[in-house]
Length: 237
Figure: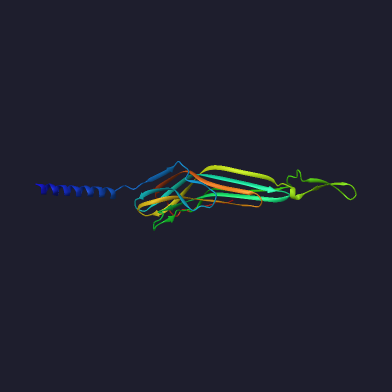
């Protein structure tokens, strides 16, 4: 009797495992998937950064499908330029800040590829400030007596203080772009949204500061079948 019960138990356990395995294999594919983030994904950065994955999600495709991917991100840009000029000598400062975004399919896997259209600029600013000023001359003037007894006002150029002009711009915008991955094979795929920050500038006598950040974001991935071979016609008058 005990042997029969043991055999019955083993048989039921085998059926249970077969049922679980069968459920995993027949798990339906996903039509649409989405992920959101309500925090700052990349903090303010003052130099060129590497590509950072800010949002990622998985989707299971049935047969060979195309993926329609929409990535929406908050993009913040900060630029500060200051110039110092005296004796009518021009001075220029520039500050450049940008945020680029790309989507990578199956990051880190043999089938990894960058989704079309590749890198997209979500925000860019180039700020240039130039000034040509005489300078502050208070306290730099003296009265000299000429040989003929007349008086002249003499300026000491080493005493002249450069005049300063500064310009600061700080913006936050939301940007969105559609990416398309064609002929994606059947299976589970990872969609990774990556961002890169680039901040540079040049100065002569002044200063500059450039920063950029990525705030909140959302990525939506939809499994579709797109029409192939359509041409884009640009009618330029």
